[in-house]
Image 1 (cartoon, chains in turn brown, red):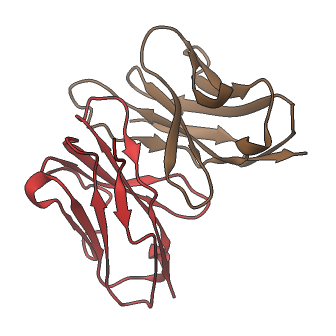
Image 2 (cartoon, each protein chain N blue to C red):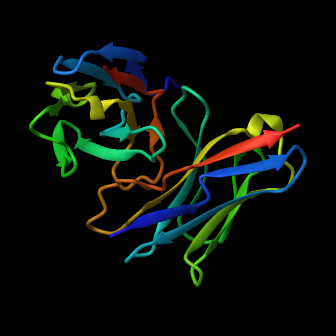
Length: 116
Length: 114
């Protein structure tokens, strides 16, 4: 079974500051990991994903995340926050293998506020 | 390429009424998901279809919720009768195959039950 915990339901940063959104997962099989962003009254947009291979994953809008198996973490970072980054961010995990149905397990979300 | 289409975008109903949501996935996508997103929570899978067959409906409240995907293309999710706790955003997503990594989401339908 898989689960996701996002540490901090609200994160506030100043424009130009580092963004760090934390995600820890639990999975009995090697995980596929995702970060999605949700703007108000919109659906979910994929920011980046980890499947296999390189553990540092780069996504859209300058975001990146590093898969750390030993820490069961997949934290999302961006060196310099922009006002347009203000949104809700969701970390998700998905199992793989013969029993994989493609179902995503989401964390509870982190609201990112960017102050001018 | 057109994205996942959902309608309506917003719906307000009284408790005990019925409501239906429609989803048209990306063309050619065999796998379709319905997720429920309650305010302040992450999305939770309600039901997954592979073509017109159900793969996972373990978290679907079957006494009031039903879904179908006739002909393996578009899908309808119904609630009858609605309860206050059904107020949520209902998201539809699709992927080319279940083991294809990326799922694409629609904009969702925001349901308010009063």
